[in-house]
Length: 451
DNA sequence: TGTAAGTCAATAGA
DNA sequence: TCTATTGACTTACA
Image 1 (spheres, rainbow, N blue to C red):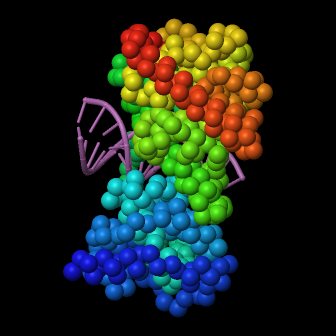
Image 2 (image 1 turned 90 degrees about the horizontal axis):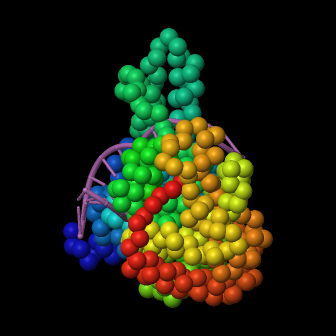
Image 3 (image 1 turned 120 degrees about the vertical axis):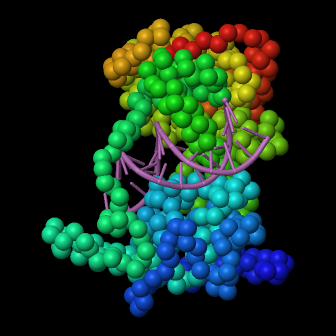
C-alpha cells in the first residue's frame, strides 16, 4: 500500500470523531438484527471498513498520534451510557481482560509514552468509536451472551454442553476451559498494610534498591524476595502512570478550558501536576520516568488513595507501637533519589523536627531483623506511619519538611486556592531535596534498612 | 541482568 | 455483577 495514501486515510479513519456513538445514549440502541458475529476477539482485529487488509499492528504503526485520554474518556462514556461492561468490551473489542481494561480506561498513558503494543488498544478503541454500529453489535453480543448463559444454566446440569454460546466468539464460554486440573496455583500474596507501608517507606528512600537491599527487606518483612522485587516494579510503574494522568489532567485544565474530565476521579491533587513539583527540577520532561518526578507526584496521589484509606487502619495498628509515626514517610528523600543510590537515610533531613522519632529513618524502623509473621507482630515492629496518619494539621505545620511534597495531607491542608504558594513551596522543597541527594550521593554511607 | 511496559487474574468492595 | 486494585508474569530492550 502506498504509505502516504494509506496513512492519510488511516489518519482520517482513526481520528474522525464518531458522532453517532456519542449520540447513542441511554442504551437506546435498537436491537440490532444481526448478531454481531463479529470479531473474534482478541487478536482479531476489528475490521476496518476499507482497511480490512491492514492488520492492527500496521494500523498502529501508521497511526497518527492519538489522544489517549480523550479516547478513553469517550469509551467510558459510551460504555456507561449503553450499559456495557468492561469485561465484554475488553474481551471482544480489545482482547484484554476486565482488569486491564479498567486500568487502561482509568489511567491511559500518553501516546508518546506507549510502545507499539501499548498503542494497540487505543487504536482499537478509536476504531470502535468510529463506527456507531459497533455499539449496537456489542449490545447484541451482550444479549446473546445473556441468553446463552441462561440456556446453559437451565439445561446445564445434565448436559453440560451448552449451545455454542453466542457467535460472539467470546471465548470465555466455559466449555473450552481447559481447567482441568487443579490448580497448583499458588495463592495470591496479599501484602498487609504494614508491609506496604514499610515498602513504601523503603521506596521513598531508595526507589531502586539493590539486590542486597531487597534481600534485606524481604527478610525483615518476611516476604519472598521476588515479592519485594515485584512490588518495586509495580510501584514504580504505577506511580509513573499516576503522574501521566495528573499531567494530562492538569494540561487539559490549563489548556482547553478544563475539559472537565469526569474520569478525573483519579483526580487527586490536580494542582500538583506538571508544573509544580516538576518545576524547575524536571522542567524538561516531567513525564519522563525520571524517578524524581513521578515519584513525588505519585506519593501525593498514592497516599491520597491507598494510604488515605487504609492508612487509618495501618496507622492505628502502628500507632500503638509507634505513636509518632507520623510523618514518617515523606521525609525521606524523595524520589529524586532514584538512582542516586545510597540511601538517604539520613537525608530525611527533613526532620530535624521536634522529635527525631518522627524522622523517616526512625519511623522506618523495624526492630531487628526478626521476621514478623502475624499482623500483630508486624504492627508491632513496623512502624507504619502512613503519611495520612499524621494529622493534616501537623503536617501542615512542618512547612519545611518534605512532607508537603509527598504527603497527601498536605494537599488536604492547602487547598487548591493556594496553588501558587504551594508550588513555590514544592519547588523549594525539590531544590532542597536535590541538594540533599547530592550530598547523600557523595557521602557513601552504608545503607541500613530497618523496619 | 535489570528495568519498563503490558497484561493477566485473583480478589476486594460497591 | 461490575469495577478497581494489585501481585505476578511475559516480553522487549539496553
